[in-house]
Length: 377
Image (cartoon, rainbow, N blue to C red; front, side, top):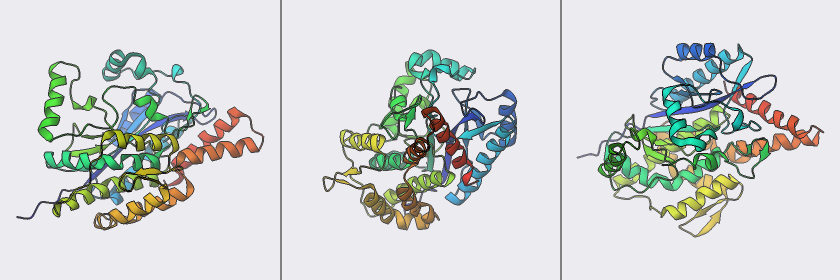
């Protein structure tokens, strides 16, 4: 009997920060703005933990082309409505110079409970991410593919890094967001799961004790979704440009299909110890794409440019089948121009070279992020 092919549908969630167009500082979202966005986007828009932060989510999309149309509509609508209040959204995982101490959380039961439960740790959560869902209906297959996909999480992170600055300082990292997020419980790389039953039993143990109310409070870099029949990749920084988001979504979708395709030949990707994958996770978090990642098969640090070509070749057949080859091949363009963290540092350096002081140069970075958000709309 032929093995049924999963749908490999995709969905994308993104978090944005709202900034004042004059000061370029963070601004709380006016109630009227939130109401207008919620009405215009019909269940695809919501507040986030901080009142300067919003979240959007696409519909279930058959392919990356559908995702592009929906994301463009979502981003455009938020930008258009925000402009009426002299605000602009940015899709970067950290605001370059905002201080978390000055921010306030959204007054809703969910967020009030989070603040109570997670105490001082959650107060620093001035960060944004993006999540990509890939539709895999069979539960055990979902877990099996997830176990193998973990290997590629550092590769995705390196491409997405957009948070080099924190409270007006260059952290030296490409994704400072993860240093904040990793302070929460139930984060980081997922454990290797034996199957869906194993996952359910672990979740049940915590829910029975009322430690968590459901699996949505498990915030691993990759998880079986608590709401949908999907694998949910959560490793990536949010991307300023729409087309970068689509490349990451296409890569995650294509990698998942490639791993499924291996199973048809009774093959699978080697599962490395989390200790080793975590080393690559750190390298991606620290350096982005500039210092390469470890290829554990050949035991060498390989330049990211080489890894990108290998990834494109690895999933080309799958990307073609999913109508996502152009988006996957856009990896080359991102490698050539640098990820957002590198680009932000370039904007800052050029501003300083022209005589602007540190704060003005930080503002130049925010202005760049506004331009990037609007570039593909």
